[in-house]
Image (cartoon, rainbow, N blue to C red):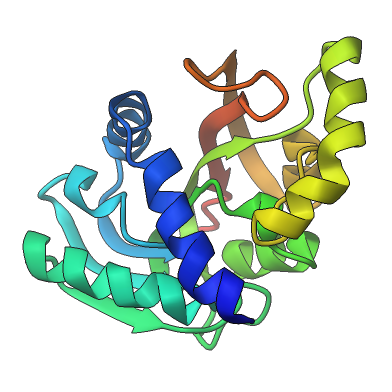
Length: 208
C-alpha cells in the first residue's frame, strides 16, 4: 500500500464514517455479538465503542497499517483487549473453529478475493458461530445500479479498492451457512450509489 492508502485515506475514512447515523447502525449490528470475536477490516476501530460488555477478546485483521495507527489510539480509549493483525482477510492465521463471532463492517467491498475471505471466515467460526455484517453493495434499482457501475472505477481508485457493485447475498451463498438473515435499506445522508446496505447475520451450522 502506498502513501495515499496509509495516510490520506485513513483520515478520509474517519471523516466520512465517524458520523452519528453510522454509529447507530454499528451499535445495532454489534448488539448480539458475544464471546471470542474476529473483526476483519477493522479500519480505525470505529466499532470498538459499540461492542457489548459480554464480548471477550477481539482479534482484528486489516492490512492497512495507516488504519492500525488510529486503531491503537481507540483501543487505548476504550480499554478493550484487542489482538491486532496487519494482514489480509483472505488468508487467516487461525485454526479452524476458533471464534464465536465474526464481524465485517464496510469491509467486504474492498477485499480483492472476497470469496476467499468469506470462506476463511466460515472456516474459523465455531459450529453455531455467527458472522455479523453491515455492508454496502449493488442496489436492486436499475437506475442506481447503472450509476454504481459507472462510478466503480473512480471509487476503487480513491477508496482503497472499494467496489460499489458487491452482491452480498450471492457472496454469502458461496459458503454453507445454514441460516442467513438480511435487512436492506438506503443509508441516511449517503448517496444512493454508495449507501444501499446489507445488514444481517449468517450462522454456521451447529454440528454437535
